[in-house]
Image (cartoon, rainbow, N blue to C red; front, side, top):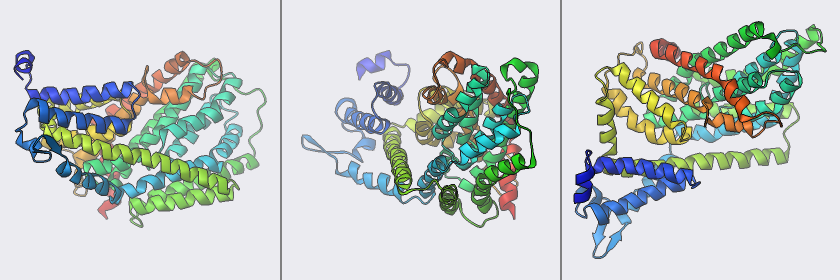
Length: 481
């Protein structure tokens, strides 16, 4: 204790909070599963608090008490039921496996492959038409699946061989696929928004409606860039040598391939928009609609259904496991006063609320290189909530949205994380794509290809930061009546 006090310009609790985060990140780099790392770090720092720091700490002894020479864990593990039961019984999180099932079933339904085949013919006469097809399919998939990894891998498998065979620049091809695939984190129904809604105690409907315009804004920026780039550097996106004429039949094929997934999006988001269903109920409608699409395309077999169910169980179990472990980690962090320490440090960075928000976004952007969105959403976001509420931000909720500043902040974080997933050298989406790249496509090609899209994302983040109405206007209109 005396040694620590001599070398510290922070108090002991602040050192312990920093040490908890540091040990956790080291364990991740050692390859330890996230849930085990969170629980292991939490248990170790509880024992440190009892045996090394001060056995008489009232805050700790309230939950772990001495019984002669051993630790009695009954009070601590009595709270495990609260962690597990509170998660499983949460009505918002019921939507999580439904949306996962919806995305995985769409992946198996053949909808994306059919859209790719028909759009290639429709846009074949345009320079960069294949890149535009991939981008549009990525936007539709983002609004249908909400899963980044699935979208990036699917687009990479379908589009990258075709684009390289047509003579597209490897940078353009990989950048287009990576950027369009990451829209799934933002465009609803995003799984991340479901978890944010629970962690920040805000309406999931507000988040879904608030994310729609920023997501479409980014998609529009990407499409505009591809069109302009095709005119400026035609060699990077050559026209196909054998172009089929655009006929009524071609347009009809595109309509038949695009209408079903768009109808599914309308079923999910439209039912929320008009108040026909809650977001949780809409997730069930989406899962049912995805199964119907698979049946219509004759892709739903018993084996396919079991595979999708198994993948849904694995993914949902993985997220719920991290969810419970992160709650445990945050619980121990609060025993050290971590939430108050972090709030004090961030609020002390500036007297300007917008500067504080910028600082938080910069911190989350940096953490996006080290942690997945799940850990950031579950661990960091609840710590930021009291900071945002204490800034006194004047965000117009139009008299409808309960916490407009929190909804605005959540969408800012979603855009920031999307940017960090694309930023070299450790953007997660880049490695998803590299895993399915054909020989000859290197990480260098991917890194150079995503740079323009990262700049466009930063521009989109700036627009959402400067114009909060891009986030708050639509949910206010949707629920104002």
